[in-house]
Length: 105
Image (tube, rainbow, N blue to C red; front, top):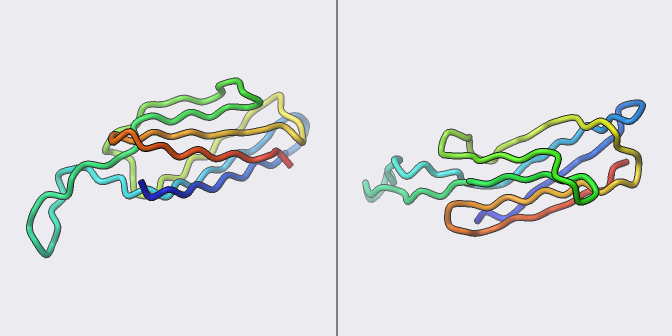
């Protein structure tokens, strides 16, 4: 897996936190050809996405080949406070995992 993830979790006012996530991943569909060899590039894409706030799942999804390279995810959560813990875990179709976390500021 490409292996990097960046997370930003900032309070926007009251008890709402704005979470932004950038995941470095090739997201290959399996139908694109290598321009040099003309062979198909094997499928390699994120299939499971999970975000938690203090250990409780707040966003979960199953992705496929329709998601762009280096996906960006943004969402807002209500009920958060500074110091809370946001964690994100993704698993790709090859079973590789990326996990990262951030503290709400």
